Image: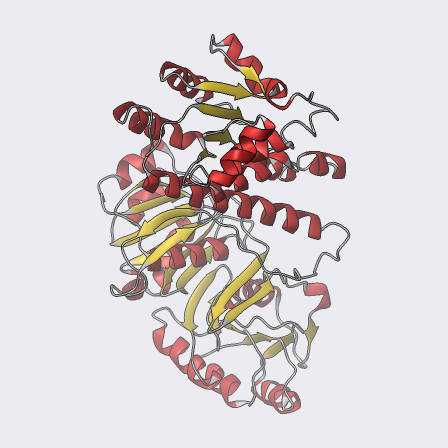
Length: 510
């Protein structure tokens, strides 16, 4: 340990900085500061030396240049145990800077504003801050660097205990955080500016994932796997607020996201019950209680221990239905006070309040790399769908087909969905052959299949899948088309007197 004598403070985020500076002053440290930070500290009664006094050069260019100076860089980078470094400082009249307290211009906050201009973005790119942070972190054995108000109290407490000193371990921990901060800052700038002038559908030349750790998880998909959640606060399931319940698991979060994405396909009140990322029931109805009841009716056995998504605030009537069975977790935009009171009886039930938002890229890891794609935002436009059979769907069948198509998009391939208007009846998911998905969807159905429609996420490669569904009473089909045997499948549909629509769009989900 060595005693800290001089501290340079220059912060955009002023939270806690006055308390920190007072604590440092009480430990007899000289405080050097810049611009607005120096004014604030003086107003708080903390003696401050202007950085321009240290450099002998005034701040200029509207604050763009104030700390880019050898007296700052030298004071941060000199290795105290290197005699040559110390002679150089003495020769040039440069004093050591033993602690740096800096946080950066709020580029990401500005970039998130819908009214942010290009000039706003450029002016909020910090230059001096990252330079000083990197210099201090590089010389961590001699310089403590603080980049977050969250660390002020712990650092002050340690210094109080140790007569103004910090341990090497603490300084190393702070340096690692400093390098994470500058890396994330540069990544955010690069990602935001790279999108300017590029086609909307363009993928980045370099994939950068800048996501702070939100929480450690007990384990991953299985107990022998370590896991954590990373993401940005307030965005989607990763940024959701947990209102009650047990600790979230890796699998809970995957299923919550699947449920949330599915229900947000619908404009009317909707509910989805997810097991192992697949919907075992989904419904869109005039009210949320109706939607939940209809979703639950599809496969009540599989719904036990499931994860639910809602696209409306959960009300008391819906909550009263939920507590009738065991549910692991719920994702919803909000909950009424009455619903929260009812759901509180299930103390282990995880309640997540989710706000809209999330990334535009879908990223998956494979051995040695990553796959990235744009999110599947494809929507069915009835006007562009093509009826391929002699018989066109009735209006009721069209309504059911549109609903089933939205659900099929969220079922693992090969996906088959039997449905009525606003309600799934049977779901066949993740099979190696499409006809087996049809058979499983029919087998899982507890509601009557007579008069249902069928959505297939990809084309029927043979007529057997269609024929199997017709055995169970299906009357209309929706599929992308594109098989070399499309003509055979269409002929089978005409022979069986059912309607078939081609969308021209596939919805594989792996």
